[in-house]
Length: 104
Image 1 (cartoon, rainbow, N blue to C red):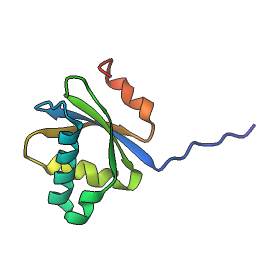
Image 2 (tube, rainbow, N blue to C red):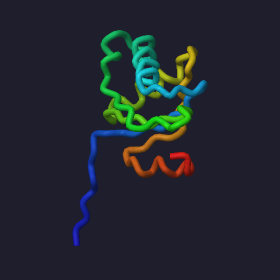
Image 3 (spheres, rainbow, N blue to C red):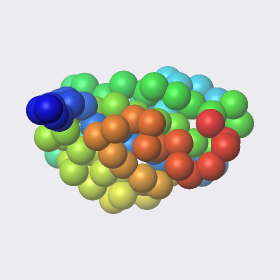
């Protein structure tokens, strides 16, 4: 029997948001601003999809290309403005992000 691995070009990141925001557009703006501040205008167009925003706005899950993961995490880590997105966990396998608890 042969086994095949599931390959993907996507990577998933779960962030906490403080103070919380209930608008996906606000979260996307924070991501775009962080990429622009850290890497310039060209990086602002990095493809990042917000897949989920918690009902209380304190967490979100985003999807990006696996090669952009470090750039995205670094840009958000260096951002000091509010709201602040802090990386909780990341994985190439979306269901693994559920391990942080039942808040999803």
